[in-house]
Amino acid sequence: MALYRAEGVVLRRWKLGEADRIIVFASPEHGQIRAVARGVRKTKAKLAGKLDPPAHVALQLYETRGDLDIVTQVETIERYDGIRDNFNKLVRCMAMLETVEQTMRERENDPELFTLLVRALGTLSDRPEEQSPMVMAGFLVKLLAHEGLEPITEACAECFETTNLVAGMAFSIGDGGVLCTECRRGRGATITPDGLAVLQMMLGGHLGRALALPQSPATNEVDHLAVQMVEYHIERRLKSLVVLGQT
Image 1 (cartoon, rainbow, N blue to C red):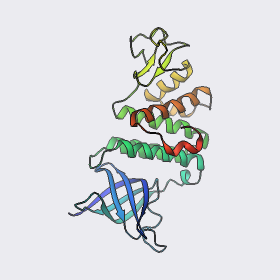
Image 2 (image 1 turned 60 degrees about the vertical axis):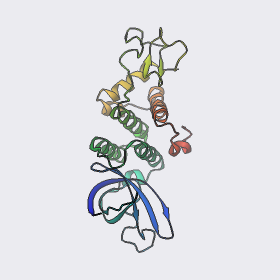
Image 3 (image 1 turned 45 degrees about the horizontal axis):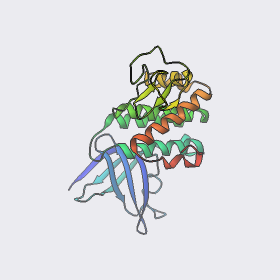
């Protein structure tokens, strides 16, 4: 048992007893951390307000022998006020945090996923509200790629041909990606060439171009598809998006 320092993003919190909270953090050095913030719900508590999702913080914690460490100090790195002050951004942010909680492993360092999350939160905070669906979708598909679950989009996932990726093709999450007109055989849901192009743009390192696209049937298609892929792989619904009627 010892004190240690960590950088973290607050993923979730809930009440414990009369004055405490349990906080879940994403950390680059320690993976997912679950800790108790004692007395944080008291009005004059020093930590009050510093541990609300999605705060990016510098932490000092006391390691215990149990499942929950103890938060002893917190310094704010970034509050992401551009997210907190916008309902639609906040909802999509919570879906991103929910996904990270379901995928980041406890006590296993994952600096790449942490960096991906911090960059996505900064982008979501700074960009206009109308770009928030593409910010979330881009984060979700990149998270899947990080987890080794990147969908096949440049060729048919079954025959690996590219010539039949035209109108009438399908996207099958269970089959790992796009299916050409010859291979789909009733599987998956139809994906348009424009929707596939947006998905390829995100996975091909051109997320900035995807974010600049005006809202359209193609961007809406990718927004919904990204959520469906994540829900399939984490085997649960994203509760945060219920209020948007998206899940």
